[in-house]
Length: 206
Image (tube, rainbow, N blue to C red; front, side, top):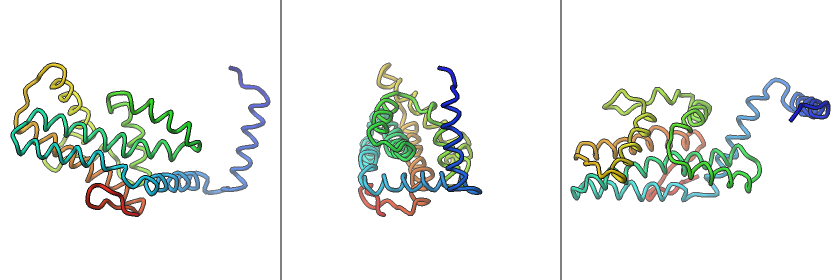
């Protein structure tokens, strides 16, 4: 599709409106608008974290009972839910004005497996809200970036489900620690910078 004179005229009109509204702080205004929409989503969906928290607690119970493979699978699922359903979903809704369009995009995006394709979006969000480079985050006991460990955990989870791979107690414990740090260092930080917190059961408190 070619770029027509009409397209150019509309672009110039939008730029003119932007200059009139935010002559010196356009990027800041956009960021604040997105932040407010993001916060509004959480306030309207105070239980968005509860499925992830429920699955995470199940992983801890399974580890205590000695079901290491199952504990790892549940920990991997909790990690994925923390990052995708509880973080990426609100972000998409915050970026897109139409609720219907946002939900379609979310449904398609979150139905795809794998976390690596979302790393860039998550990194930009985290830098914008928390002022921290996401790639600098790691577990206290490790040096591998936390998001990379989350992706590796998905691979191990898939090997357990599809190949019957064995899992040690140490691997299961590490999986739970990854989920814990994703919640503590990423999800909780985003909520804190939006003026929100998490109470018992995973419910968000405005």
